[in-house]
Length: 290
Length: 275
Image (cartoon, rainbow over all chains, first blue to last red; front, side, top):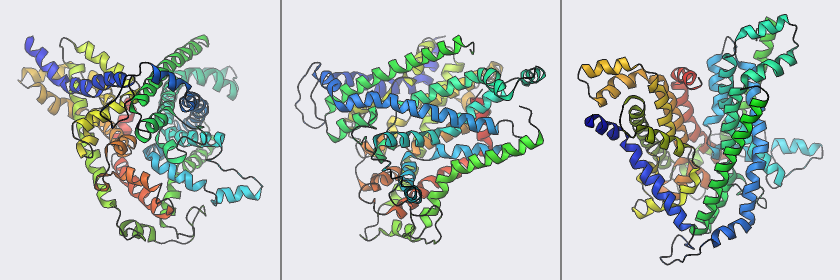
C-alpha cells in the first residue's frame, strides 16, 4: 500500500510543483505586495497598510473597470447567446456538410485577438467601404472613439470568436432532446413559436446554462482586443480589469498598487460569478427548467 | 425537428449565409494581404492584387531593416510546441493519478485542481512575472514555456475521459507486470486519441495566440513571438496595413492547417467533450 501511495504522488507531482511555484507562492507574494508601495524596480519600498486599497477604490480606472465588466457582459452575453443559438438552430441535425459547418463556424475561434482586432480596425477605419457607405446617408460614427460603440465593437468581436464554439455545445443539447416530445406536441397542435418557447428552450436549458456560465467567465478576462483597439479608452469606457492592472503594473510600474487592484479584481470576479451562477440556477428552477 | 424537404433547403441556405458572415473577416484579411496598397481597407473586395505586402514584410520595408519575421515565426513554433507538449504530458500524468490510482490525498488534489481552475488568474500575474525575473529567466524561451507547462483544463478533460475507461484493462495489464507508466503510455493514451486531439488543438491554439504573458516576459526583437510582433506593429508600423494583413495571414494559416489536418479526430473528440 505504501508503494501505491508513492506512485500516486509521483504521477501527481507535476501538479504539486506547479501549484506551489505558480499558484501558492504568487498568491502570497501578491498579498504581501499589495500592502507596499513597490515600483517594480527600486530595492527600497515601504509598507502602506491598506492605502493601496483605499486609493484603488477611489481611482476612476478601477471604478470604470468594475462597471465596464458588467456593461460588457450586458452586451456580449446576449449577443453570443443569440448568435450561437441561431447557428445551432439552423445547423443541428442537418444530414450533410456536417464537417464543413463544424470547421467553418469554429474558424473564428482560432483567430488571435490581435488579428481579429486588426481586421475590425480596418473594417471600421475612416475611409473603409463601410464608413464611406454610411456617410452617404449622413451617418458619421468614429467607432472606436465613441464610448458606447467602442464597447459594443469589442463585445461583437468576442461574440464572433465564441459563437461557433458555443453553437457546438448548443447543437449537442439539441441532439440530446428526445424527438418523441415534438411528435406528441405536433399531435396536440402546438404552434412553432409555442414549440420553441415551451418545449425546445426548457429542454435546452442545461446547454444554455453552460454557455451562459462560460460567457460570463469570458467577460471578466478581456485584454487583447481592448489593448489593441482602444487601450481602455475613450475615457475608460472599455477599461477592463486586466487592462487596468496591466497599465498600473507594467506601464506605470506601480507593482504594489497594481497588486491591490488585482486582489480587488479577483474578489469581484469570484463573488460575481458565484452570485450570477446562483441567480441563474434559481431562475431555471423557478421556471421548472432544471 | 423533422423538417420537410423545402424546410431543409431553406435551412441550408440560411446555414451557408451564416457561414459566409462568420468567415468573412478571414476572407477580408486574405484579400487585403494581396491587395494593391491603394485599395487596402478601402474596398470590401479589392480589384487589383500584388504580393508587395509580403515582399515588404520580409525585406523590412522602406527602413531596409528586415523585421525578424521568420525568427518570430520560429519562436512561436518553438514556444507553442514545447508548451503544448509539456501541458499534455503533465495533464495526462496528473489525470491518470486522479482517475485511476488510489492513494491518500487524491481527493485533496482533485479539489485543489478544481478550485485553482476557477480561481481568477489575474491576481497571479505580477508575482509570476517576478518569479521568472528573479530566477534570471527574463527574455528567455523558458520564461514563456515554464509557467505554461501545465494546464488545469487539460487535467480536467483527461480525468473525465480516463474515468470512462474500464478498470479491467488496467487490472489486466497490471497482472502482466506492466508499470503505471507503461499502462498510461501503451494502453490508456492509445485509447484516448480523440480527446487528445481536442486537447492538443485547444492548447496549441491558445498558446499560439497568447499575448499578455509573452509580451511581459520578453524584450529582445529576436525573442518575440509572431503574435507579439504583430501586436507591436499596431503601433509604429500602423501606417502599413497591407503588411499587417500579410503578417496576420502568416499567424493564422498554420493553425487552420493544423485544425483541418485533425478535423476528423477533432469531430469525434468534440462529441465526447460535449456530452
